[in-house]
Picture 1 (cartoon, rainbow, N blue to C red):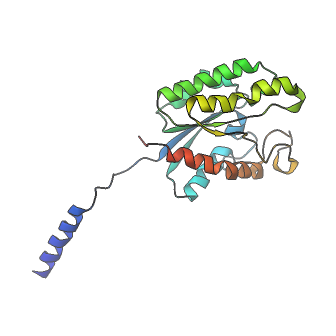
Picture 2 (cartoon, helix red, strand yellow):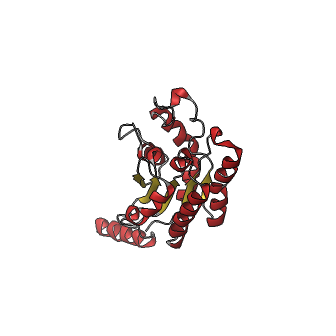
Length: 211
């Protein structure tokens, strides 16, 4: 009799608790970028997306980051493969493109147009965006820098995206944090980038509604 009463009490208490979603999927973040996203020159565990995913999980966030980085890609190249990269869909997106455009001295107007189209497509799908910016190299001159560097804050404002102003912040020109080519971060450099970017990515996750 006592066991029956306890069982009935347990059922009554369970009925008062809110239902728990079964098998809730992790938040899926698409990282669309170039070699900086792809993890050029690094092992699979040392690249940007792998280190960022671990850092977010250490914060208790259930996320999966899809590495859609392609070495050598331009902003236009990223636009051309965006639909394919989205694949099964995404809950949020990190867009890191434009470095190769700048290194090749391409017209910033073309970079702006391609990035604008990428952000427009993501916004149409109601996918929250973190836009990781790039800065023009000093040797390209002040006129080029003025046209290039303004692309990222202006597009972030236009589409209500979270802006991380400079992807390589803290690592650029620091030989101890770069690979031998002087351009790509090594594992320690990526760790610093992830540490500095983490609050912005956490904000992005906070804006995200899982599918």
